[in-house]
Length: 57
Image (tube, rainbow, N blue to C red; front, side, top):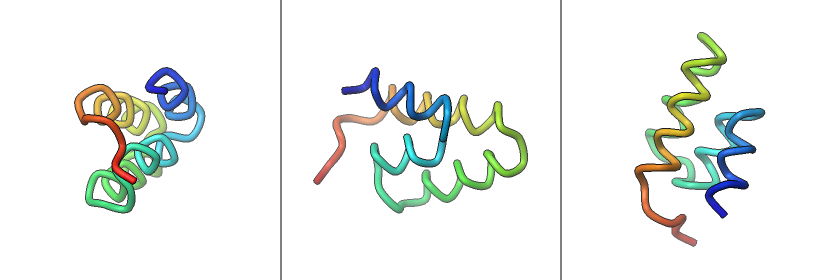
């Protein structure tokens, strides 16, 4: 499932973070990073997906 989230994070970084952590601070930070620069948004999204545990329902 992480591979799918990483692929989503490459195309739409905030969605990848949302799927991992929900509407928390990491999501809003990623949205800001994506608006300011697409590459920082991707890097942050991949970092969040790889370091956080499985998504909580």
